[in-house]
Length: 224
Ligand code: ADP
Ligand code: ADP
Image 1 (cartoon, rainbow, N blue to C red):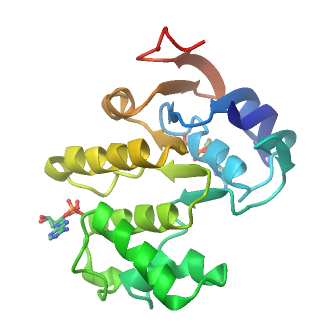
Image 2: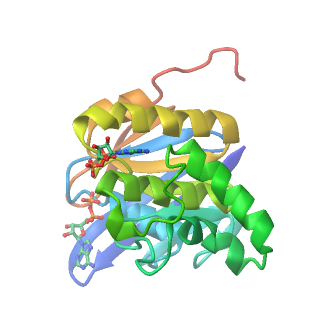
């Protein structure tokens, strides 16, 4: 089963060609990383899949349907779509559920569960500026999980986490991936991170962004 299909996607920023004719399938329940050097178009591709920017040509299908903007079946964490600074950790994590019209008790109980999963129990009433960069990334991750989307899109989710906490954060994420059986697409420029975390690695090459290779580190030969 395929969660996200990318078909013939090209992206021009004025005269900069960021992506050239990308075709990719993202299987349901797999964690795929987009790996490549800075400027190869990883964030652009992720934002097009999220529906935050339009492709110049080509299309994106999610669960078989063409999408042209954001939708509830996709949740994302991007550095430039950060937390609401005026809201507590609890409010930030529960916000997507609030938008869906879920009652306060129910959404807070769901939010509390994911705040615990990312190791931030006790920080529910803090504001983003009271947290470290790595902790804010964890809040973003909890918020993405809380809305219960089928597809999670994460842009450099470990970038603000210092070296000694990174492996722990990665293990928290992998535990959530195992638990939730969702489709993950995350962007990194770290080979180490890609190999450690993913079922599939898509390598993009630079100028213009094209797919150089798709690698599946642990292919299960019992799967047909
Ligand atoms: P990556 O995430 O792999 O570092 P990006 O998707 O951010 O790559 O960028 C791909 C290319 O598109 C780069 O050449 C970058 O300079 C260019 N680019 C990205 N965003 C914009 C923008 N908003 N306007 C113009 N050029 C952009
Ligand atoms: P950064 O890389 O931005 O500093 P980290 O996530 O690595 O962010 O955390 C930075 C500091 O915050 C570290 O000293 C770490 O021990 C502390 N910290 C991180 N998460 C927690 C937590 N759940 N409870 C208490 N302290 C934490």
